Length: 218
Figure 1 (cartoon, one colour):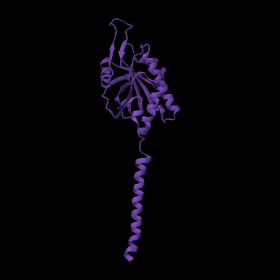
Figure 2: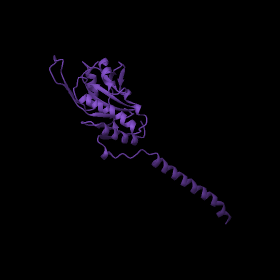
Figure 3: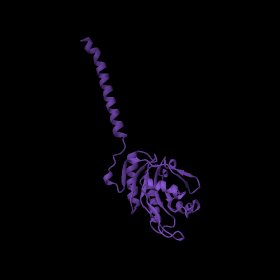
Figure 4: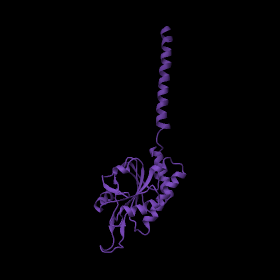
C-alpha cells in the first residue's frame, strides 16, 4: 500500500506532463499554423512551394544593380512592359498601384514591403531616367528595371515571358509584343503565383491577402 501511495504523485506528475505536452503540440500546430490556403478560390495560379528564379544582372531606375537578391525580403509584383506601350502596360500598372492601397485598407500589415517591379522589354528607349519618370508615377514604391536586352531575356525566358519587337528596325515608333502576366515573388525570391490578364486590382489583392496570411509573413 505504501508503494502505491508513493507512486501516485509520480503518476499524477507524469500525466500532467503528457497533458501539457499534448496541449503545447496542439497550440503549435493549430493556433500558430499558417492559415489554410484554398487554391480553388484564387483568381491567379498558386505554385506550391514556389519556384526558383535564375540569377540575373540588371539595373534599377536609380542606376543601381538589380539582381535576384533585390527580390528577397518582401513580396514583389513583377510585370514586363515598356513605357511607350499605349494601353496594356499603363492599365496594368494602375491596377497594381491600387493593389497596395487595397491591401492597406484590408489591414494587411507591413504593406510598405509589398512593391511592384516593372521590367522593360524595350531597353533601347527605356533608360533609367525614362523609367524614373514613368514607374513611380503609379506608386512611389514601384521600381523600374532595365539593362542589356540579352540580360533582360535571361529573366524573361526563365519566367515564361515572351517578347518581340513588332516593327522594322529603323522605325522609331515601333511596338513590342510581350506577355502580360503579373508574377508574384515571395520573400525568398521565389516565384509564388502568377496572374493572367485582364488584371483586376481587387482580385489580385484578395488573392494576395490569402497568400500572405497562409505564409504568415511579409
